[in-house]
Image (tube, helix red, strand yellow):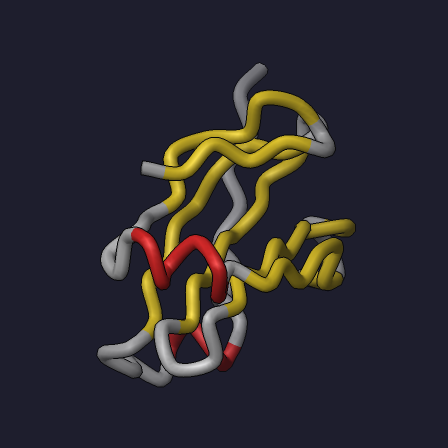
Length: 88
């Protein structure tokens, strides 16, 4: 049987900040949200830990400053595995 859940995204994602790129992805078999903040040059990975409680937890905060110096409009592509992020 298929299940569906409705839950809010994190406040940081719903603020509509033009300098943030938000994406929903699968990470370690869980729903995750990536947020690239162009002002701070960080990418955060948030995991929804409990669908019933609608509880998100920040799993990673990755400094992408050196990468954006070479390619200013870098964006998230996918996770190769739990430790490697592919960017384009």
